[in-house]
Length: 215
Image (cartoon, rainbow, N blue to C red; front, side, top):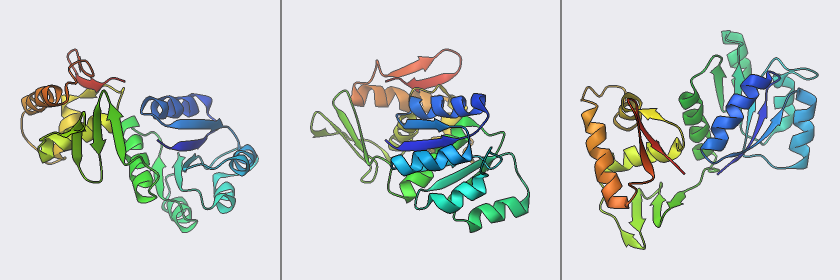
């Protein structure tokens, strides 16, 4: 997965972001001011930087000007049109306004990593290999017959692994915002994935909520 720089002087938010990114497999370096962010970027290569704007020593905008070619998502409470335009003019890949939903942040991180080709193209667990680009699944070297919607659901579980997802959220992620079917559809597809992949002990049921891919 990706090596991500998190720059936010609010330690609680910084820790929240880092904890959730680590849950899904990323590595993180946590920084709390703009000057230290540039020092960290000079010492190692990052696949992505999550950058607050209102930072001590140097603002996020000032850091951004010197941080190229690292992809950047601004993560800030500044919600004015001028600030957003300035962020994109500086070359930001995305601009997220606080407060934010964790799953939205993870989705946007994945989107930027896909665009910059820094995201993993395959995923492996318990003898199963998932290829995101080819949209194929193999179990112990043998191809698994999987439907397009089963793959969408599997990808949603993998990208948000170790995070409990409600049935409604899984419907939204795999079927889309405009899907009006019953949540029972999720249960049926989950059961099929468990059997096909032999993941009965990996796809966990979260009582009265939904499911979690636990690794």
